[in-house]
Length: 453
Image (cartoon, rainbow, N blue to C red; front, side, top):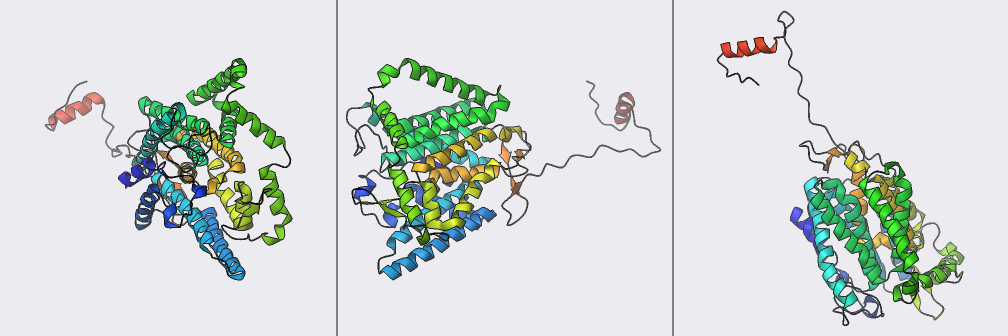
């Protein structure tokens, strides 16, 4: 099991080395990557070991997926078109839900969580070799169709940005809960910082804004722990970023990165931008999808040039394709770690502001991204759900590692039971409690070696 989880983390960035996905006609099985096969085998093991205990929001979300598939197939039959797109979209969302269960099962045992986190860190390190080369070298190993961007081993730079954002959240937020040694924590911080660099290398503007929001929200939510190392590091990062922007603004004004950021600000201010156009288009046709949704894979909108694009706004895509039921269920899954009890252990309570800030930033990122089908984000969501469950506590052996054992079946909650305490020695009422000196004499009389301290 640990080997499988380590392989899932390592192969997470190995999506494709071919051309841009938008220029390819991929079937159902052609869209599966190496990590998907490893995740399917891991999920099968989890099911055989009966470790899947879904919560009520997860059950509702799964039901919304099945209902949306039925509606999509029904609409395709009425239109006389193929239902292949519906099956592809359903398989993508169902597989992402499988990653949620993989992360949920891994977080229930410290050894499994460490294996998954170590695999993700190793995968980021290997991916950094490709990203650093393609970012600084004159010729790229994996060239991107758009100039000034790096896609790594993904089909597009947008996928690299989503992977980097989710990996940074896992490594910088969840890793300290299962690793106590400073060397291990420093290694994960370095890997997380490298994942943050991937976001800038991919030039994913929505992810850049989400990272800034993550930092700002954590500074607000974590104000109670001003003296903690995480808060001091976040505050120092914010101060250095502000100083760098203030002093190097003239030099950055001519760079590709700065032009991209400024262009994104102007796009947001424009009332007729791409995201707003799709929102208005679906709002005008609300009678076609409200309240049950129009089915998976059918959230398509025309653009000004006449081409058909899928909905880029993840929030809008959920409510349009999965209906109100899927929309409510998904956000209950997201809010469950935010408002969880988080147990008595300080290692989990310290990362609670980080997890909450990351999830709020992820919701901002979803304005221009579909994180509901992202592998890394669903892994994060599953692991964070276990950490936030009631009764998560440290390993009885003394290591600062959250461990959990299922307390009830079917509830999805995870509880930790403390080891039984030894009852104090009791003496009969007619026998007085021996003093240390008398106790030593009694032991000597019985032939027991007595060692004086």
